[in-house]
Length: 266
Length: 326
Ligand SMILES: Cc1cc2nc3c(=O)[nH]c(=O)nc-3n(C[C@H](O)[C@H](O)[C@H](O)COP(=O)(O)OP(=O)(O)OC[C@H]3O[C@@H](n4cnc5c(N)ncnc54)[C@H](O)[C@@H]3O)c2cc1C
Image (cartoon, rainbow over all chains, first blue to last red; front, side, top):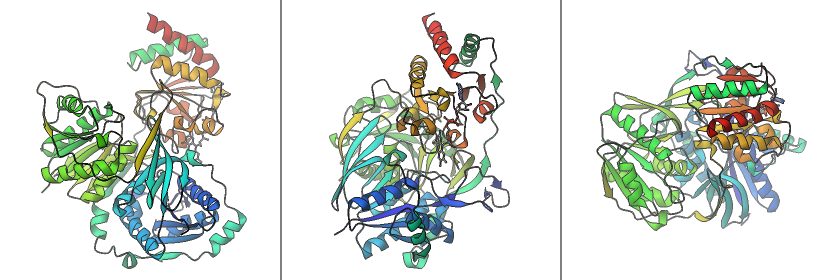
């Protein structure tokens, strides 16, 4: 059986410089452009590279959120992914806890059609930024998970051997499949969408799953309320800084060291 | 009703990290807000009794010891099973873990197993009327989110260096052995390659010295490493220089790199684009050394030093060495 890879992607604001909308208490998103979450570019590229290594392998991009979530799926197709699916669950994308429940159900749908071997994720998102969704999806599916992966050494339909970037070095980890793999930027150097890819993205017919298809209706309330954004606020401005002037580099260095010593940071 | 806060401590490669003491502080504070008990648990492959005793001296009422050679190399699947049993048996409502790679994986398993709401990279905690609120940064560190929990149980991953390290106290807590049968693990650790000796991890460093394109070339990192060495700091970098191959990716600070929260961040020849600031803007003290007095990093800095890094950094190293020698 050929390798079947799902890559989970999110459509996020193309900028992180967002203001708070006082009427909703959420980030002000009107007029903001959305794009493929930058971290997901690496997961998408890795899916495409594995496909290129394994003729016959199939790749599907899966997104969750409001209707516009499909933007990320189409961008993944433009970058070489074969097919796309969207779990249309508006508001669920705001909570990593809820998003993982919805994504896991959608993955099970894909898995039932054709067994999935690998589910790839980016490290985090540039909006909610929990870095948790991949691990939570694995937990919901009861599949093994390896996150922070900087290299996939060997992979076949049975198992994968990967290099995991840890705080203190690099682990080599072997996991049977199906499994969830979370990537980091070092894993590859993503290519830009090709013209052919962009055409395919425009034409692609996406699978659309709604709450009834996923059977999440009964769980929705608990999933969305378990943890939710109660308040969003800007960081208070940092206290004004001091400027170290001096007649020479040595003079400046001496003054800097004196300030650091006074502040007890050295 | 579940009640009580539990800090989960995961030693790595046979040693206890100082961030474990930060989890004790966070957990004890949370339990204090809620007027409930605070305990800890250590999941260890070896030296468990020693670690448990150390932790017990720093605030928890009890420290459960889950020890089994199966935990020597971390496995989220192996650890989650006995922890879930412990949490259910004792009825804990809240679990506090440090946001590391291992912590994230384990916390996710516990969240799903217990249907507990979860938040990661939390740097502030409060509770009112029995409800917990966790503060964390969103949108590349530009906005603060207050996350309210409504689930009966909660899993909270704290950001390293956001809470004080708990100190030994007069009356130690009690160490109690717990059921230590591991869950069956599918993903298997094979081997480990440590980073070069003497390198300090960015994520838990109290001081960070970072270099950017202003260094001029890859050689500039020689003086950055030397400055880091005399300061006892970790070495960071901007994406521009990582992409240019001047230094490996593991040193990158920012949106697509690591997030740091040191007492001191020294930015050498880094302009301070929003994606870099995403990883370091909550440092307590920011020093910027830059030829452009108007760049964003110089404006953000607590201490701005206008000038050429290639002139100032060597003088800074010399001054710090003099001071050490004195
Ligand atoms: C999606 C996305 C994600 C990104 N993620 C990250 C990330 O995680 N981390 C990150 O750092 N960037 C990230 N970036 C890149 C970021 O936008 C900047 O390009 C990058 O941070 C710039 O690095 P720099 O400050 O070293 O270089 P520059 O912006 O070129 O700045 C060089 C600085 O050096 C100063 N300088 C020059 N010569 C000297 C001298 N002799 N002495 C002193 N100062 C001197 C200049 O005045 C200038 O301020 C990301 C970008 C995107 C689009």
